[in-house]
Image (cartoon, rainbow, N blue to C red):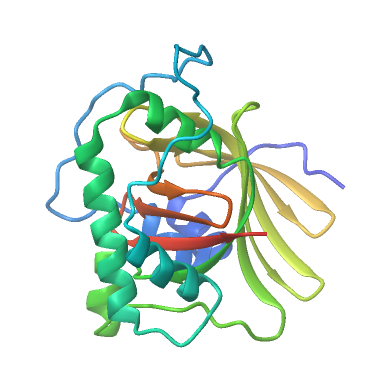
Length: 230
């Protein structure tokens, strides 16, 4: 069944319902102005170099630690955060637009959230970081992309229950992927919505690592997140 009338829902409510721990990536950090730069679409054209196999900006040692974290092996969460921060810094310094395009193109597929620091406001509220996502009762938070079709799905699942937001996404320069949601799927019920369209800068993730195994990004709220490919 589908509700025919569109529903305007607050972005924070969309976050609370569908993102849970991934909500780190939506809210604007208080006191931090956002640059109103336009989002430049990446072209599908290729230059002389391959746009598929670009080397990672994350060191081998840090990647080994991050991969262990993605597999929920016994690793120190603070060390994981430091490894992610170093990978992010290296990606920022690379300044290779073609490599950035290739990185975002590798997002197509499904990704399960395994680790997040939570946004800054959340850290302040709970007195610490959110780290590994509990793997209990079949709970999982999953993002799915089709970069060629410019689409995103973002949902939480608990056994047979599911709550999924979907909508368009836009690859931008500097490895940033902007998105909004126009549909909420609650089990068999589909509801037209509008989430993320009422702000000057839409929600986004700035990815700094995407490969065959993991993806890592910083959200608009300042939180870091790590996903494993399903």
